[in-house]
Length: 476
Ligand code: ADP
Ligand code: MG
Image (cartoon, rainbow, N blue to C red; front, side, top):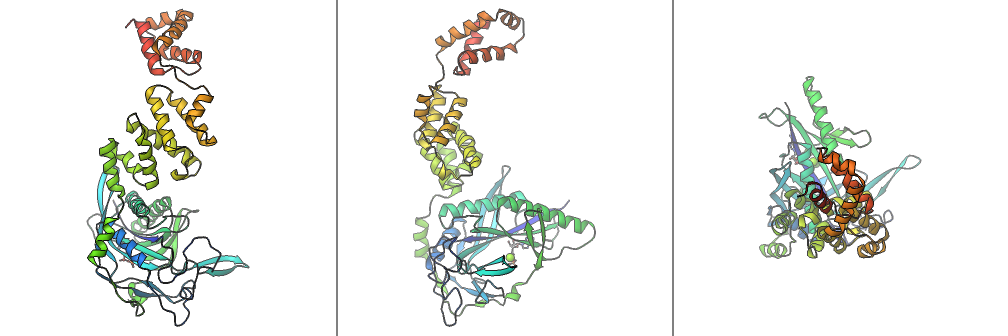
């Protein structure tokens, strides 16, 4: 049996207005090379000026994962040559990152586990090479050059692709909740390198492969699963795993070699002489602490206590501020059990969002209307089936729930006296079935229910029908 060992390095683009060391804007999708200043282009004689906002954001992150914040942090040059890196070095941090020694708890299949966070340092992003642009030629877009990133490095504490995805999702929800990143994975604001090795339990760590730049939760899972099998095949046939950097190809669902892994000393790190060491005071940290929002884990606990939600539901509802706000807004006017409201949101509303590829913040039915629908189900005014129909009509037309109910004359008949008349009528015209039922053919219950539904055009409350039927058939 092999044991998988995984450590993740996550790159998070910070949502600052300007770059880490220049005043160029950081908007995504601008025309090529319109957001690169002389500093980002590395013209001779220019000097970087630190965007202090990025330090604040790194501190916010550090406080959210119980980490230590350095009182003195240093920027270093990481030297390498690449066409999208005009300076010939990247300004990063090496020996004194802003954040170190943090931890985060994850939950996989009901098991709680702590993942260590080695460090989180600030660095600037590189530009982008655009390949096969024309005549097979490549071009460089430097808009992204100098955009602030935090790189969050975990300990090699994860033991399965599921744990890695849970950890990645947790970090994603934290940075989004803090508002320090938009977390947009398709645009590359949140991407990760997965370091993977395997070993026999109890033995030393094996040689790792590093899969670069994965930008979806699903790809992380597939890349790790592929890599684990590849390494197992190598070791079981007597080979050795090379330490190398690999790329994941989502189309082929496999990883392939990119380059052999460089060592830290290949980068000739040294403190950047153009930038002073950054001092961070206790006062500064305590001000930032004061303004931290409620974090997903704390919110989850509150949801469980305040609304008596199931843990798994509370976990999902607290994972994004947009979703938790939507839920809490609906809960305000809910008169039914909140767990039922949560179920309705998680299955129906999220279902519609997924189907239409929308975020919850783009939902076309308001939380107040969702609460109403759920209240009506609880009061027996409409059935679950009717509620779903009203929801889908309201979603498409943006007409309010009440107007649709009125317009379509939707109501559920829950009055036992009214239903007793209908049930009596149905039993009268089916004497044979009634006799068969009394002789033990209990399956006929659903036949009667079906007939009554037909008679009432689906408006009868199934719970009340059952009660009335049992009363009339068995005389109880
Ligand atoms: P580098 O910066 O060269 O990529 P680090 O030593 O900083 O290397 O480690 C980077 C990541 O690799 C960390 O997340 C760490 O947990 C992980 N890692 C280190 N050794 C292993 C290993 N044997 N198997 C899996 N992951 C590992
Ligand atoms: Mg690395």
